[in-house]
Length: 136
Image 1: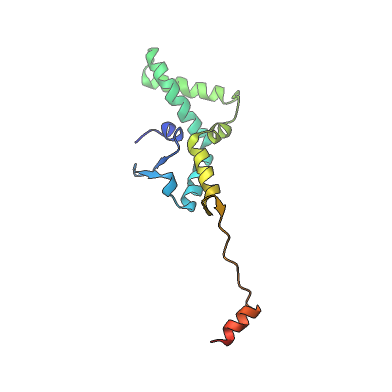
Image 2 (image 1 turned 30 degrees about the horizontal axis):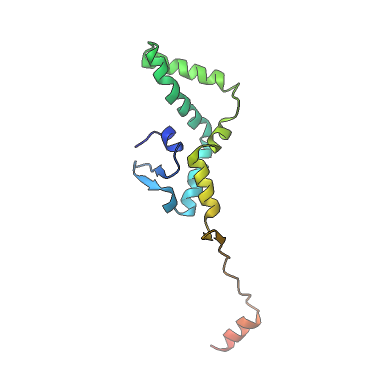
């Protein structure tokens, strides 16, 4: 199973809690919406994962032990979070996975790009309804 950082950088698969891949295009609307909400709630945590993935190999190569590297990265992240060029939420919205989720949610309820209208509600007191009632 790829890391969450790698998962955010592609737009075809989500890896469920059990580690099994789920194709985004096969998900129900409710699953898509819940997944997008979950990712957005964790934008700060996901951004930190990304930085950890980028910085930890560097600190280890510089000779720090993994524990020392973790401490330095945590301190660095805390300092950087005050001077970010953009908030983690903006960074997350540009990830391919999030963009694809948004697209699929908007596309849901369409047929070949055309909106599928909701079935018209039948008024209980309409002439059609009275005729149907008399026909029983």
